[in-house]
Picture 1 (spheres, one colour):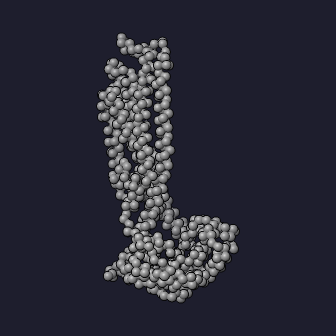
Picture 2 (cartoon, rainbow, N blue to C red; picture 1 turned 90 degrees about the horizontal axis):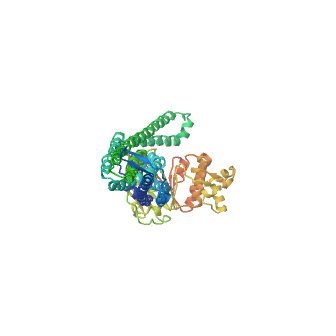
Picture 3 (cartoon, rainbow, N blue to C red; picture 1 turned 90 degrees about the vertical axis):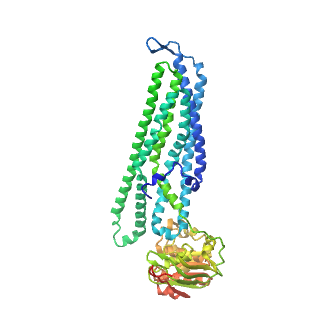
Length: 571
């Protein structure tokens, strides 16, 4: 995000209505309630002016000789103002109800819109592929989709309603003031533009503060994600306290950026309040002199004095709430930048049946910062056969897995399923036939039984005996009903690997991709993987292995060596 991003912020970005449909209904509701509130505010001011004017006029008289108001002993009759008092009460109650309805739906709309934006953001980032995420966008996307978008709530709840009131209440109130006293309307017309003028000046002086705060928060989120991911390794070498200073410095930077934004909001609110008070004071002084000279009646004077603050109030609140919601506006701009990132065209051709289809990679190359990884790779994955990918680290074995899974399109070469280019295939129909076991398997929260898909107990026990999961279950306090946390928390990496292997055996997919399945296992665990691979072969699955251990390579029917090449060596 550039420091001048706030220069491009519109009062209501149309992209917000495009990407967050929940905001559309809320905008309509806000406009309707804004018009209702504007009418009620004007009605309240007129009724209050008439009630007070009639009470005062009915209880006193102006003395021309002394230029003072003489209070008469006769009280005003209640019946003379009863109707207007009742009407005023109804107007005030209706205004309170309309404001309450608007605020209630504002919080709900903010939650729905933020959730919708968050869902679109994550889906778009996922569709952009691992290369885009690995380019440095991934950690920032995580921070933006969590804490960043939460800052949009002040925009929906406070700023947007005041913006609607500024567009409705301010001009309508000014027209009413013009109808009562044209010179007061002229004074208001002169003073009111000062508020948006100073809003622009303050915005020019403080641009980039919210963007800076969001950037610091992204850096802090990136550092925290890297720290959490590498914490086991750091603890292994006794260096877990090393990143503490960096995280503390980033936290201090975020705190300073946040407090800077808040200080601007408070100071700008004070400036706008002063301008609004100045405008109302001008009207009050003029109307006072005019009332003293007999140039207007008391009802008109009171009505104008009550209406004058209502002209300035929405403008004042728009300025104050805008600076209070700049964090959310900056987050929305970052979200729009991600959502506007073009995606490759999705395929529409149904995927052939992988139980009989062959996956073929021909002269596949993927460009990376280190060159071509892999380079000119030829690979055939057939049903009922085990294919192993071997080669030194950094040559592109994991990248090849991404290409096979359809997560990454090669920069050259072709990937075909029975002659159909994978880019033209509907990936959902393809993924439904693929099982992928990464080095660190992801397990959904729930009981061990539900994580496995609640299979038939007999099938479950046979598969667990083959993978060694039965030994793990025997040591758990609640057996198959043991609750697992997010990502399989509560189990070691090796135990999670056994769970993932068991799940793959219970519902063998036509294509099974195993990325270093023995990376976190001992000798016994390695034999479990070998037995699992053999069982998958017997089930007719096409198995693709990324392997380093010789025992795992030896089980393969075909071994393909993955190579890389410098960037200048390309066709």
